[in-house]
Length: 462
Image (cartoon, rainbow, N blue to C red):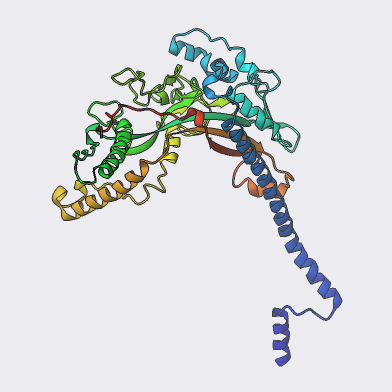
């Protein structure tokens, strides 16, 4: 019995057997179990490294393009761009010259301007802000390249997928594309202008008059700055009522290229075409007019914006379709170019996780038994107003700025395409359609707006 127990313990402890043949057999069995796992681990590490290498290359290429645009020569700025080169030939082919769209808009077929091809060839000698950025990026992509159609053509090219018998199983359109957008962002105080109070000047001859006047002038100029950018977007009957949060916030007041800054075309569930032209960033007051001050000075940026549009940003190959879902589930957005809407940019620039993270939700009287007179509601409202005042005080120092956004989309292929590994990865998605999307944003001082809705009177003379 003692010998049996020792033998069992030795086996459980992994002690080798005395006969060599038995030991070799055990090693082969262990190797047979471990080898597939080791192969999968090695292949997985190689594929992850291959993906990471491509991701980092493309990320750096987008940064190279954004840096090039931020320091472009004075003759290469968005406002000097040849607007006839903006719309890609594919957008003319698929949307603008579609027979149903022309019937919807009651217009004849549009001619494709020759500039749209010339500015999409780096060897054409035609140079502007957007193609200068992209050609700089293409020169930096080595060893990677954009695949698919030539940038100046409409010839559809896709990745051919074969089955195990060598027959064509599927053709996946290449998503490889570069998109460049420019934003003008203005900080606006959404409030009644009469709520901005100015300090009272000190009386002449009062003690320490010079010092008190200096303090008064500083406070007056601070309030004048706020007064000049204050507009009541929530006034009764205003088309922007409820569009912007109260207080200070950064809003997009212009997006370039001018003729490609919004996605206006949709397909309804019945397959019919429709348009919605209410999202023009230049018309952020949203009344269809180019609004001005009482003295005639514009308070909306002027732009040759001719909606409806089916392209957002300057696109290079026209192979990337906007992937964002439409808020209305009964329609499908038809658009090429940037994944970033103006609303997305506003949400990011207003620093919600920094400035506004400590502001609780605004309480409603209906959520409390005693209504507006409930002590708990009053306490919650006071806490909300206090936190909001602190965040709003900081938000007034958000900068006006011009922003250059560069996006790149690219199809990634597996390096080894190991069959067993491919089977595992297919559980997480189509390995033949793995896409890498990266972006970079840089300040663009040449596009910084400075809109003033009114001018405060100068401070009282000393």
